[in-house]
Image 1 (cartoon, helix red, strand yellow):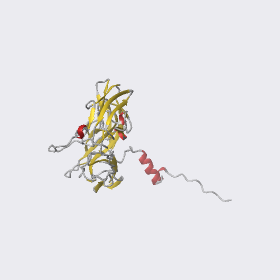
Image 2 (cartoon, rainbow, N blue to C red):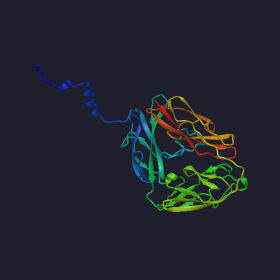
Image 3 (cartoon, rainbow, N blue to C red):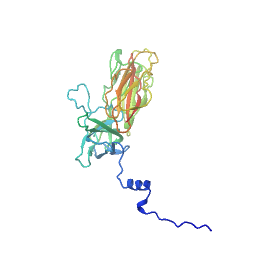
Image 4 (cartoon, helix red, strand yellow):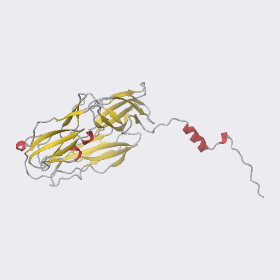
Length: 352
């Protein structure tokens, strides 16, 4: 008979190192590794004009002295407050709130949702980090929320001439460039609500749908954009929240055939902080082989300095980040006759 050795009870003080570390970690408060917006949460539905709590987790970032909060539409160009009072020619976004360490909660507080907002909105939080005698740097986080007014829509209107005449005598310039076949444009559509606020409802994300009575004159393309495809008359009908509005359009442009160009912003990429990043639109093309005009803009992430934004290749210096962050850029191209492309997008992930 083989005797089994007596069982041995391990003293608590001799618990395995891994068990001890696990037990110790469970007792610690959980923090994210990077600066992060904790309130409001991504995808939350907020009421326009309301006040909501805003908060951040600083994660492993130390030396934060203030946090600035900004509101943007989902595809709005990123424009943040300029500290340089000598800067001219730049439109800046107003700061929605400034969070400081002594506030409760720290670096957070009551945040006003823009009264005139509707649809997807980006909340951008930019944290300023003090580095002593070194130049200050910043980190950011961004969430997309949905904003809906509590008021009812009463009237849909258009902030333009009625009827709208495009290309009269081939010389008029509505919405930017001289009107021509292939031109893509957005109608400035607004809605009056029962709370007395007029809100811009041009994009499908706000619930708007477009139809054209004659798609051989004006064609509805992606993202609520319209395209001139021929001469004649048409009526654009806009529907939103069981309301509708109509706009008569008369198109009289040079009828020389012209296909719109196609924008190509290149592939998404990952880069290291501090590296020089090139955005290439060289694969954009025009069906007739005409030269193209380029326009790059930033539509996600904390504002960075974008060089050569009106050339085929734009560039920027990847900023310092604590954790991987996404920067999104939009490219539109225009041919010599004034026809525009639909927008193309490229994401750049910047890693520490």
